[in-house]
Image (cartoon, rainbow, N blue to C red; front, side, top):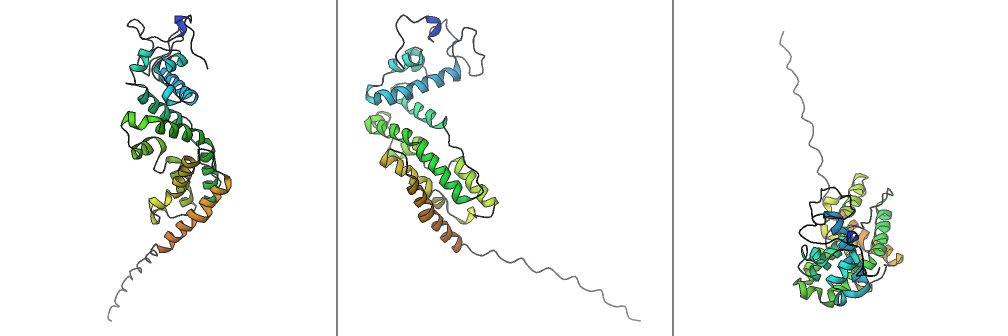
Length: 249
């Protein structure tokens, strides 16, 4: 998408003047009759524009002016929300990731659910990981003061997300898994390995690698942990009710 021409109509471009309050109002406000965007709608448009600009130009060449033009708004609108382009890029990465969740399948089988979900993650997230890694290596970490660990936690992800927990909860309800007997670090293994594959290759994870992660690494680890779990204690014997003594004649 190209930049807005200088002769663009002011009614089609969001500005940030004292008299134009339609572009920076509470998120719950109704959209104005003029069609100008405000609140969450405007912010989403800016973040989408920042992502597109990041993909097209890279971090070094990305400018607030270019993002504003692509979003059909003004630079002051951007600076009112983000201090500089690096903070905007971080927000754009998070927005792009969160707006494209991968749904958890429900096939009735833990292995199949994991393979399908990880395959989808390995495909849908490949472009995101490539762009995020390129931005990080191009100076985003230095510019924002983020450590690699913090970047991984905030942007890439280091924990079991809601979809992963949903898969395990369903497996537990079916009797396939005792999640309490398996450490969280083990439950996170397949997701961590897929993220690692994405970061190392910057391309979709092959189906055979997904199957290997599940069949040769994760499921054997789970089986080992479950075999170590202590057997449930037998229920205590039922207390006997004492017989009433016979009355002597």
